[in-house]
Image (cartoon, rainbow, N blue to C red; front, side, top):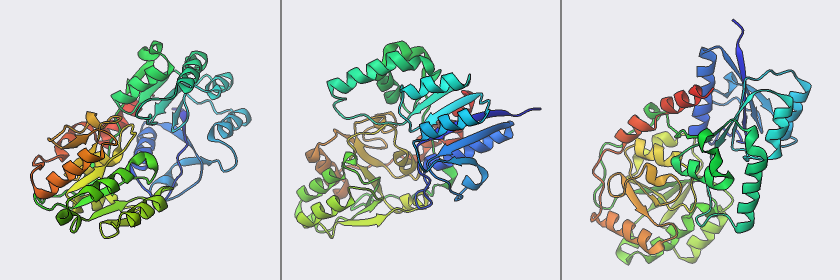
Length: 357
């Protein structure tokens, strides 16, 4: 029997030092497709062989955008793709019109993009709505990684897309995540797992620690896992506030799934989010999360049940929650892994993505 063939376009750099939930998803989705006689051509910005990437058919683009590279590929090769799926690529652009001129493939776009707290400026909202009118007709299915994302797609590009827009939640490989068996109810330990950029709000965490009573500030330690363009500014802010003993930068760690369980709580004071894999992984490790009311966070965190929700940029509330948790006045007693096993497993994510092809 002749195999089916699909293409997946991902504007996602493959880095051995940063292996996360999306990497695991790509590997497992490719394996499931192979099991069902479906060949997947993957288009990434770079080539890599770490993990299971050696098993994938990867077309590496180093010179142009993924979109331009793929269009050239389609022009030069008779690919006969049945479906074309995009991840981390802008929605509703002329690219999708150009694809339809070269192929009869079904076009599926997955939206991972967070939105600003107060929405886009008026001019950008108009531009997005115009793009929706002009180019959404060339896209057969829109997938949001949370209900929040689905609503934002409709807000951006028009409610007429409702009948071809669905949510598929991100998931994690549950069995690979080590579980914390006991949680300190008094003087717990804290971690951050995040790309270091301004929109992740870690500067708010620094300000919140500055406001803590001296008896807590003299003891509390917060480990920050991750790297990014905002790291130097965070280091400078921490020095200015004389908090160098409170924060430890751990860098990018490829084995975070074994590290979450070493802490009692994860802190994620983010300003914008779509649906956070680090939150899911932390909960799967039985580590509650203190985070903000943005994106899809409230679709997985129930305040005081498996974590704490505060308003984004509310430094006073963040300080208060950290203080109460540290002193044992606020505590999470539930096993936070149970929800993840039921609703946010990687197997479920892969199955749901496979169903749409």
